Image (cartoon, rainbow, N blue to C red; front, side, top):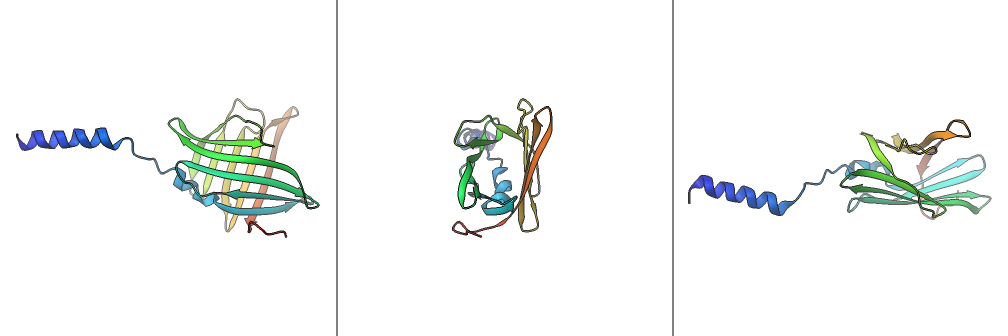
Length: 158
């Protein structure tokens, strides 16, 4: 067998057994990982994000007022063949996906123009803080909410 034929066989074998290479985009979302908290309007909002593993990040979010949970949601960012998607499940309900449309150093923007609110969800870092913003149409006009989270501990109460 010629050297060329051996090289072609080796190349064919390598491409058929290796499969698609990971994009590593999920790793670029690691700036979101950790426990975060903010105080706004007498309420405490906490988000706890896992590090990206296995093509997924998971989180919980809880809003506390006077020490009682008044709102919660489950959050997920998942890499699929069609892209990277953000899903929130307010109070555990199902919700549509928002596609990752922009990813820069320590900033991610997810969007689904078929939704009213939120149509866009953004996360970014400002120094040691994690910022989040949701945007869309609500009540006949544009609406948005924004949070600046500081690092927190899972058991922290202040």
